[in-house]
Length: 530
Image (cartoon, rainbow, N blue to C red; front, side, top):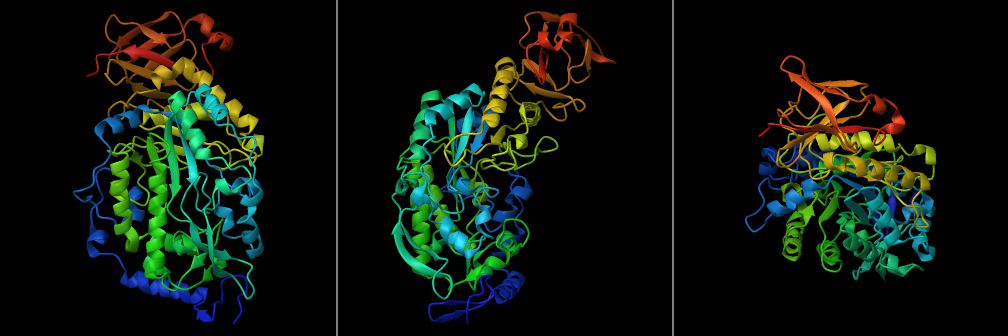
């Protein structure tokens, strides 16, 4: 029996392995019987995270075990103060930039997979400059950043001391096979030989930029991690190891997914699973040990019910190292501290007790986009920043650098444009809180925020209103000043209970060149709100 290139039949060593059709049939049977504890299937979602956010982690207990603690109240407060950042998705996938992040690896031909896995041997991103990056982020008004320490394809952008012991040989004689190896598969094995994460964290600490380290639970290079999250090596018992969502993604044929490209190999032994979880744990502990204070860890995807007890032990160890690190919920359920709506701004205030920020690519995808026309523009950034902050969240824009280590000049221009806007309007954004109930907006062109002490309310106008603006959702304190941020003079205003507040904008501001900024304008009110 020969491998035909699409996972329909396979030989591993001398042992015949089930084909993909059999894998799907076994998945359907196991899904019917379910491998999940009944309590996990019927448990009510936590009031903290929205139910949809917890759905992929349904095998995880709703209430964390007694020994576990979340980050402190002060860490949550500091998280809510952060409002604008960048999500840097960078790795060897930036060399070919065939699509979103490392996902295009899955439908690649076997020859391309083998070539891709060896790209690191010649990668030398000499344009990388951690200080230059951080200076650009500060000039863009950002107070945080996320960086991909390792995406799903398994390449580590830091000096990991862990070793990969088994991997795929995609072009082996007779078809793909698992082969033994001994390497870190990291940036330190490239000609560049510099710890990207170390340089970024050092530069960020100097500038008080808060750090969020992204880490993928699955690893497509390390064969020990089969079959999790569309791993290109699947196993006869995949459905028993994976979550229902994971299984669906693995079977999905549209988009950059595995589809018919799965190769079926033996189930991992207990020793292999143990080695997988030890390496997974060691990498997470390295990231919390070697790079100073880490404010957030952006965990991604999941590893499923069978290894959850070991992952839970890892979380306890992480909390011992940095008790206040804020953990994204993915793959850990209610053990997480925050969540990230992706490529969407919630339509209204999130009904959640957990903090959040929206992650949204500035270009087409989170990784490098070479086409200047694909970047969405400074007005898009400003509008979405005002919208997310009014709803109680924050905004991270996804911008990936090129293989050389440099951001597209158009992305930098648009980001710095947002920074110029924030120099004028930052008071209405940073460390603010949403107003109660539905008071976060008025129509399509007004977004409200308030100061933490509730003394001031800010109305962010995303369209210039002309000579007057009428606002029904705010009542200025009697005798107080109403001001336009960035403009020196108080504005004339009046209030009546029928029409609300009417603010008059002076004639000189009707010319765009005389206004304090572009894109959106912030009115500041002192109010009687408590």
